[in-house]
Length: 294
Image (cartoon, rainbow, N blue to C red):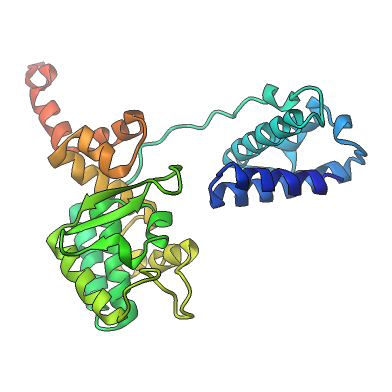
């Protein structure tokens, strides 16, 4: 029933420069919504009511709180488009509240754990795939790059003569990039890796099928490493981003950490201040109750 409107809406999102990941998320949630309204025998988009939207968000397939949040965002966008194109009178989806999600401090790897992982990947670097994975894990652990950023890197984004890397910011305009300095160890690894690629252009990281490495493939690289090394954490790419942020904040401070991570607001960077064990230890040494004699 909604398929035509969904198709034109997704085309609108692409023209409006929504990220590919956002378009994929919208497509998936709207496919769910289309299934839902068909079950309820809705014949027109104008027959959709607020209680029906609320039921979809809260009950359809017993969603988690994160799925509920994604559904609310999706419906806000979709119904805004419908009103904009005068297909409906009011955006009733705006009344849908976002669910409250308990905020948790991001987990991070200790220096010992990160060294274990780097050593493991360094031992596998005798092959082309092993060297590729070592470069990826180093970019994640040293610079805190996002997996989407790493997957989209090209050879021309690396300037070894100046020891710099050019990266596209999350949500930024397609032509907007920033450059970051590269640690010398990363320069050496990248120099050897690019030499083995034996080409000057194209994707920096390729799959065995000679396609640009997908984000899902990046995620799968790390799933089994934690158990192999006895690390008591679920290893995932964002864990390395948290680790890089925590270590960078220890030595460089909040503003530089914000710039490197590409956070638009320092609000997101502040969470890593709580993960700085040195600052916490200093605070506890100076806490007035530490010298209290009971």
